[in-house]
Every structure is written in C-alpha cells, then in structure tokens.
Image 1 (spheres, rainbow, N blue to C red):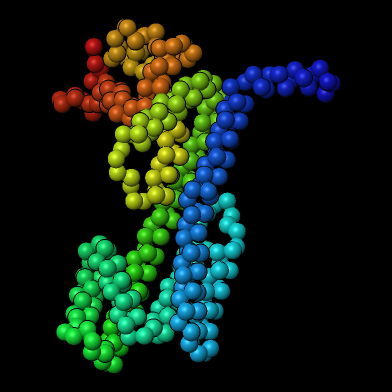
Image 2 (spheres, rainbow, N blue to C red; image 1 turned 180 degrees about the vertical axis):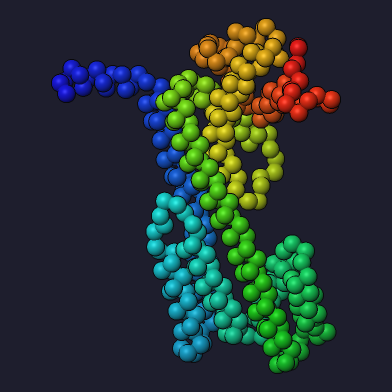
Length: 337
C-alpha cells in the first residue's frame, strides 16, 4: 500500500462514525473499570485492612501466651496476604471474601484473650450489631439470650465463671451469625457486580456495532447526555444517600449506556409509529432520516432523560399489532389514527 493510499484510508477511518464511537466507548469502558477499582473495590479493601490492624492492635494490647496468640497472628497474616494480591480485570471479590472469613475467625479467637469485663463489653457490641440485622429467628433469639446473660444485679460483684463462659459462647455464636450475614450479602453483591459488568460490556459492544453498521452515532451521544443529566438532577435533589454504596455507583455507571440505547431504539420506534400513522404529521420531520437536526437530537436527549417516554412509545407501537376481541387468530387491529 502506497503512502497516499494509507493516508486516504486513515482519513476515511477517522471520518467514520464507527471510529469515534469505538474511541468514546473504549474510553468510557476504561473509565468504568477505573472507577470500579478506585471507588468500589479499593475502599472495600481498605476497610478490611483497617479491621486487620484493629484486631492486631487488640491482640498486642491484651498480651497472652505465645501459644494463645500464634493462631490469631497466623490468621491475620493470611488475611494480609489475601488483601495484598492484585485482582484481575473481572473483579470477583474472592480475595476480599477470603480475607473477611480469616478476620472473622481471628476475631472469634480473641474472645479467649479477653478479661471477663472485656468479654461482656465485646458481647454488648455484638448484641447491638445483631439487633441491626434483618428480623430473623436465629439472630433475634441469640440477641435475647445475650441480653439476659449480660444482666447484672450488682456491678461490683465479679462475673461468675460459668456465667462469663456462657456469655463468651453466645458472643462467639453472634460473631458467626454476623459473618454469615456479611458473607451472604457479599455473595449477592458479587453476583450483582458480575451481571452489571457483563451488561456494561455487552452495551458497549452493541453501541459500537450500531455506530459502525447503521451510523447516526450522534443519537447515541444525545441519549447518553440525557441519561447523565437525569442522574445529575437525581443526585442534586436527593436528600438520603443509599446505604449500598457499591450498588449506587454501578447504577450511575450504567445510566449513560442505557440512555444511549434508549435514544437509538426510541428513534426507531418513532419512525415506525410515523409509518403506521399512529403519531401525527407534526412529528414527521423528527426521525431516523434527519439524525443531526435539532428536533431529532432533542428527542434523543429526552429519550435518554426520561425512561417512561420509551415505555410509552413501546406501548403505542404494540397497539397496532395487538389482536382485538373478535378478530381472527391471524388478524391484527390496525389503528386508523
């Protein structure tokens, strides 16, 4: 290939909608991966690291014999190694879940190093955490048992040995229940992140394919802008921040992709409805054949901004193809509007 031919090919490439769609979508997907690490995964790992430091400091302050502290230190070292290992692109939270399990086991072992008063204080904190769990038979019964066991008529009287051993056993069960609850939520969040990451990958691939084979990439951009503005309005107006921080970020990251696809699909539905005479003649100038016209881009923006508008267009498009009562099996009702 000659230099002139190569330059001609490069000029045709950069002027094609699909090229810029590929560049923009690739940059956005890279941003999704980066934000996912910096704002979701890294803070979660830092929380587990801080928990490991707290348990380690507690063990140091309590002292104890070497044979008592060695199992705890071994578990903490394993947890630190798990958190030090890098994750792959498809974050599965496997390292964090393993580290969390090891930290829970270490925390349970620290109960054996505590004084009676320390065991009672730890049990009281565990009881508070159990009361915050969803209403279930197991945590509720255990919380009641802990409450009864922690009652004392005289604060100056030392804890009886059998009484403090019962409190210690109940606290150990409470830690196990708290870990099971945490592990279940972690597994649910893991499945949620896998699904959303796959959907984001599929959406980026579909966006690039649409721009390459059908063109009209400006509609995708207008729809993504509408979805982004909608989420910005939602964040400004909201007063209560959701507790599930990772899920909140996942929704925000997917919104521009949903808006772009909604705008593209919505404009196709508008073209269909105009052909079926379902929409009036005034909207005939807005549609597939004039993608860079101001009204068309405005409608694409609105489709990305409002989720309900796409639902309404889809419902209108279903009407002419819905069989009416009394019609034959193969007939459909045609709307004459």
